[in-house]
Amino acid sequence: YWQVYLLEGVKNTLILTVIAVLLGTVFGSVVAFLKMSRFKIVRFVASVYIEVIRGTPILLQLFVFYFILPQLFPLLNFTDFIWVAIALCVNSAAYVSEVIRSGIQAVDKGQTEAARSLGLSKSQTMIKIILPQVVKRLLPSVSNEIITLVKDTSLAQVLSVTEMFTKASAAASAQRRRPASEVSTVVAMTLRRPLNTRTAAPAMTASWMESTFAPTMLMAWSSVFSQNSSA
Image 1 (cartoon, rainbow, N blue to C red):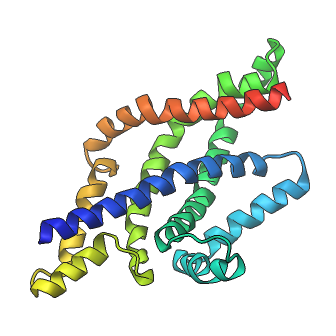
Image 2: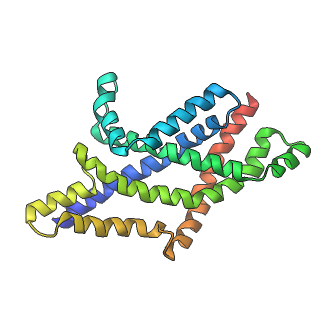
Image 3: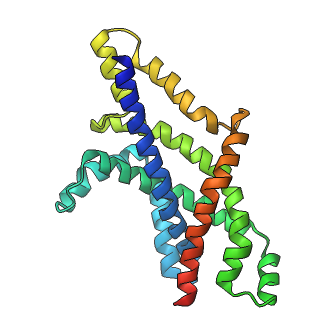
């Protein structure tokens, strides 16, 4: 009984986390480049989005996506699970965008000037010189964001979306033993341990992310810049 409930809850927690990380990284990349745009109005819109999302509690954002947006846009007939996933994506994108922006701006400007003096275009400089360095610098922050999202998924219980803590609570109520908080805490700590920067596991995790996640991000960014340069 416990195994069935926990496995289903862990599965939903991991699905929410993966969706939020992947889509949040894509959307956050777009927001980061908008924040560095040469147009003031674009920078202003991106800054407002980042400040609003980072300055409000994630539970309030979940309420907005769960209760308000379905009323404003009744044609968006999404399930409760999808609304929670979208809210987590929007929240994650605001934090990831600042990580990406700071990573790009942390690269010495001399490298950009040297690349441009050698005849590389702006997009080529970004793809071949800047982004490969930025991706490696992003990995620790992305790991921290994944850990945060694993913990934030527990707020979905407030909206009756089944995740790890919800399933553990149901199992505890049914069998009247093993408090849900204890079991959920152990499982959550187990899930985040491979990404914890204080253990030896991050070396293996970072190596895996660098060989799989980093090339994917680099290819996505390269395609965006290639399309912009060709246009």
